[in-house]
Every structure is written in C-alpha cells, then in structure tokens.
Image (cartoon, rainbow, N blue to C red; front, side, top):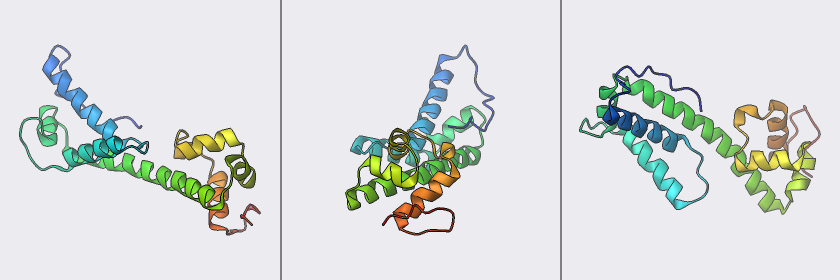
Amino acid sequence: MKHFPVQITGYKPHCPDRFLWLMVLWQAVQDATRTPRCSRSDEITIKNALEWFESERNTPASFLWVCELFNLNPEKVRRFVNGEREVYQDKSRLMNAIKFFRKQKNITQIKFAHLVGTNSSYLSNVERGVCPESRIPKDLKLRIWETIKGEDYGNSNYAYQ
C-alpha cells in the first residue's frame, strides 16, 4: 500500500483516545483495500469498511467525524481508498482470469507457466495475489492475457492451442 496521502495534523502522541481513532482510520483503510481471500467474512469486512468511508453521517465514530478530529479532507482520503481499490481490482481480474482459464481448460499451473514463459512458483504468487500487479513485468502480463484470450497481439507466440 502507498503512503497515506494526507498530513495528520490533529494527532497528539500523549492522547490515547486520539491514537485509538487514528488506528480505527488506519484499520478501515487496510480493510477497504485488502485482497479478499475467498471467505464470506472478508467480503463483509471489506463491504463494511467501504460503507463507512462512503457514509455522509457526521456523528461520533463516523468517517467524517474522524476526519474532522484529525483535520483531514474526507475527499482526499476517499480518493486514496478508491485508488488503492483500483489496484486491487486490476490484480483481481488477472488472478481470477488465470484461475478460471486453468480450471476451464484443466491445465496445471506448471503447464500454464510454461505456456506463458515463466516458472510455476512465480505464477503461483501471481495467481494467489501475493505478487503485486505493479511488480509483474508488462511483457508477462501481455503473454498471460494473450494465452487466456487465445489471441496473439504480435508480441509473442504463447497463444493457447
């Protein structure tokens, strides 16, 4: 996750209650931007965190109340959370496409790794979402999509037969 894009100006280290609310905000960011691991509880946690950020209530413990407590611009925080979600969604599309393709074609991870020109342990990290999207080389992403779609965009011969 990138660094939080806003300056926390209302934080005082000697105030444990303010520290608690800072940690609530931080946990909400973590929950809203995390990769779900196929469990219902993960989906609920992410949904609840996103609803908290989207809320327009300004009551104690609400998102707007916490922003006010630390002099934060709520829209900047929301843009940060949504930007981090986009990173996850891109990663999720690639992860889900690989899983679906391999299941549909009944291909082992080793064979798929060979088809796209990488090793199976690296592909495993990509497929499980352990390897961040930003660290996957563009040429490998292109070969993966070409293989999944069965198309050749002129950059490689890795289309699945």
